[in-house]
Amino acid sequence: MLEKNPVIFIILAFVVIMIGTTVTMIAPFKWINSEADRIAEVKPYTPLQLEGRDIYMREGCNNCHSQTVRTLAADIERYGYGGGNSKSGEFVYDRPHLWGSRRTGPDLARIGLKYPDPKGAWHRKHMENPQAVVPASNMPAYAFLNRPLDTSYSERKMKLLKFPYTPADLNELKGKTEMDAIIAYMVKLGTDVPVKKTGAPKMALPAAENPFKSLGAIKTEAIVLYNKDCASCHGDKRQGSVGPALRGSARTEADLFAIIAKGVEANGMPAFGTALDEKAIWKLVTLIKQGKDE
Image (cartoon, rainbow, N blue to C red; front, side, top):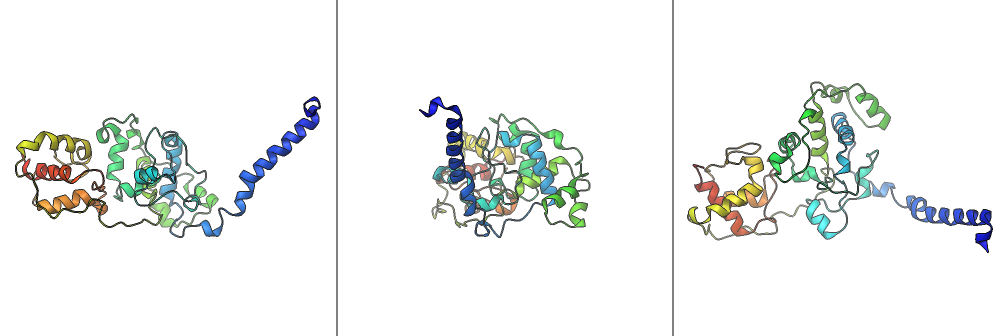
């Protein structure tokens, strides 16, 4: 009986554990993380992005936000933003990786695709006061990050990680804040992966005209929709904030419908064509065109 001989039992147990470790942890490295897994579009972090990543880890953001889009269809639909599921080649420059497993907050692997504004206006407002953007959020405020960025070790970090940089890259750090750095990092997330361009959203743009000729009958519903999806960027009174004011508009109703449905990538506005049905978008259009005095 092996259990009566502890020395042999321990040796055999060790052998079994090592076999399992080899099969599941060591052997796979023979066929993963190879050159074939690399993604040409994925680039090393710039000094500012790397500083932002370090602040992201310092503040424990990875304790609430994962950075891995699983292969589940629901995961790809919710967090992929056109980039699909996560691939190993995306993380070739991540030391350590920040995949995580807990989602107290949303996954951020593709957050740069959701809010593509290079200036990061949405991120800044969200970091300074999360509840101003997402009222139900339990995320703490990080307004204190509006303080000078410590760049004492920036060049040393880049050399240690063997990331390419130039004196101009380091000079760009002058006058930057920690907020600037973490926003630069988040704006980059997901943007290096090839994005599957789908053209128009799943809901095709309607050929028919706006069915709501008067705001009065739908005003309450329209305001509810606006407060839920638009107020965080355009102001609770449509006075403008991250996005422009929406008290009346010179644009045609068809143009407004297309903007809401497709989004405006250059300005960081996400598309709502898959989240809102046609009637909901027309209600918002009616509110924007006719609701001038609220």
